Amino acid sequence: VRVAMVLYEVVLTVDAHSEGQRILDLLKRMARHVLTRSGNVRKIENWGVRTLSHRIRKAQKNHYNARFVSLWIDAHPVVLKEIEDMARYNRDVLRHTSLRQKFTLPDGDGFLETEVRKAIERSEEVR
Image 1 (cartoon, rainbow, N blue to C red):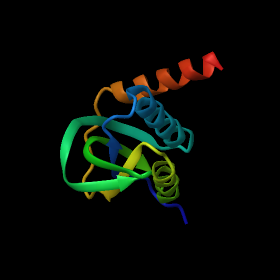
Image 2: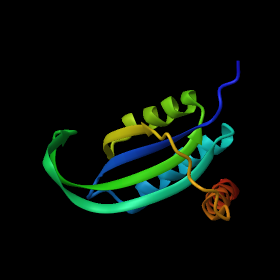
Image 3: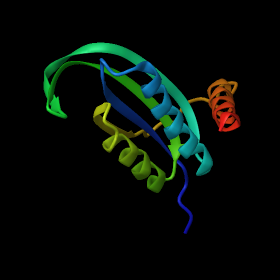
Image 4: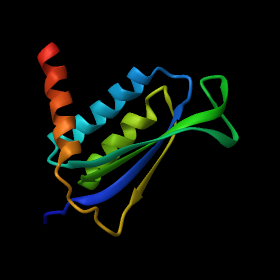
């Protein structure tokens, strides 16, 4: 039995005071993981810093503001679980939510996938 790729939206609530480079590195790691497991990264959106409706307490610190980032991926459900584990154990991620989408995004020119692949290749060349 072969399971088809499913479109998911993964929303990350990230500490507003964390370094942008650490958030970018987390997103690159997630994108690299999805791409190496035969998935596809459709879109990454930065919703910016917003005031939270209630306090989130993590790592003995109160958070009243957070940055929201949305990651749209086509992936196998097992890959989604691994992405959620990456978010769960990252110190900058306060909360995460995964939503299975009933619709599909139209295929664009592949700009995002191309840019993510280039970023991954550049990071591997540095190593």
